Image (cartoon, rainbow, N blue to C red; front, side):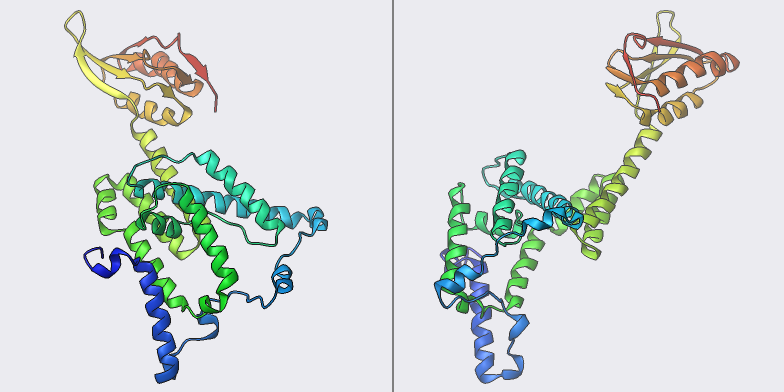
Length: 330
């Protein structure tokens, strides 16, 4: 786009809006059958006087604090808005040419304060949206002042030229959204995720498809369930470093090195590993790197050492496991 001289000073999104509006107005004169009106256009309230403008502001109804449905809706909005903001925040940080990291706690605090003020004035909840953020970055924004300037332009346009804004076709805005979505979800992204393996690729694709078929909150929930499934499967299959070395007698020794934190999720992996040890082998379970080991895992090791190992003539030894903090019990 920057190769075309026009787009060096005119943002592509603004060009789409101006072109779409001009075409729709031209259709109104020369091709009425293609003209879009009513719900197909932006619909902003138009104030003819200061009293009309003040009438747009609706004070809160404090009697609704006793209605439990209010809290259900508020909690739902808080979860959805927070998730959307955090996801947009991560995408925005990746788009930032300076690769800065945003303080997520500060972002959510600002969002909460903004939503309280907006609600007090009869406004809708606000969230960070990747469309506005990406447009800001693509326009050359570098500091926080760009967001403030963006807000000033929005409120000024809504107050001064609402009739003009109401001529913008929603189809033109949809084109901008589709283009932004394409830039954030390129084919190369899916290719890179596929290269990471099915454990990463399937949860990613399921999340994208679920969001498109349902909504943001449900889609993320479905994607998280799929991701949790793969996490549990990986913990069940294998989560210990295994290698073979020779001991001081020159005999073959199988060493199982435990990770830093061994939770109840690792019990299945440990049991599976012990069950597949070759008969008559010499095994060392090393807990030198572990900080916490769940009671269930310790019980599995102890039971195998007392019952299964003697029957299969396996010499099982442990190292630095007694000194590790035992946690939990499931």
